[in-house]
Image 1 (tube, one colour):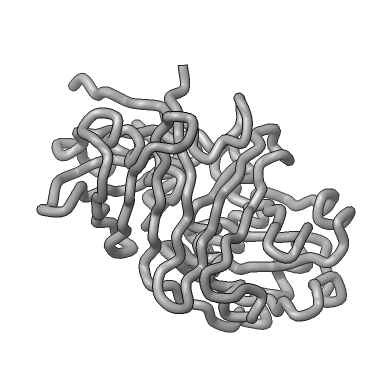
Image 2 (cartoon, helix red, strand yellow; image 1 turned 60 degrees about the horizontal axis):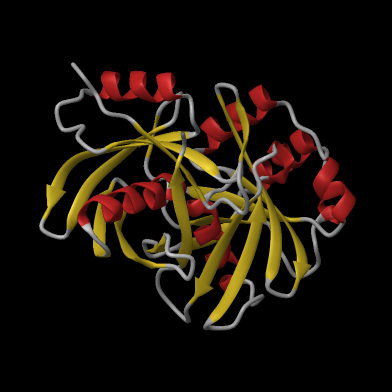
Length: 280
């Protein structure tokens, strides 16, 4: 069977940046095992598979090299850009295992396609203290390292992400972790997304490290679902006001600088905006 696999990078802040994603626009005939095999062959954090259509847009599934995941923000942005380039700009609603996600494709100032992705209704809840303590032990952190006013919580806007905001900039950049041990804890806790670690660099600006051990990958260069979850988390803890735009920079720890724009309404889904370009 001949399968066309597109390769795009999303949320790039500069050439060589962003998070790469595989895209298969005609995957209706593929089995789960075949989609997983394609994702392993592509070897990007995730590959998106369009497995059908609804009246408002595509039905999409996502696979990392290790397993299917409910949702992937950067692969969604990349797929929406690829569809806009082929079929035109406008609004599409992606049907995913995490729920319906609205994508609005328009033309950016530089003539490229940009996509505003509005998440499912987010959920923010306390993080189990035992999981928190085990996570801290794996990352070499203590409760005293957490920034004041930023409790450790779990936020979900497609995937579940524990969110940790660190006060000290050097600690944020320098902490280390055992990928295998972190992957084991993620599986046990049901964190299909990343472990999100943040440092605030300005009132509405953050740098992020998103831990995602999967195959050869340890950290995600740009994580749309985590950015949406971060917006929901910041709304929950009172760190933003309705209508604020948060800038999240990510990826420099893995050599792929990225920027994600996060718009936070008073209620409802969080909107993450970015673009994507083909990988030659």
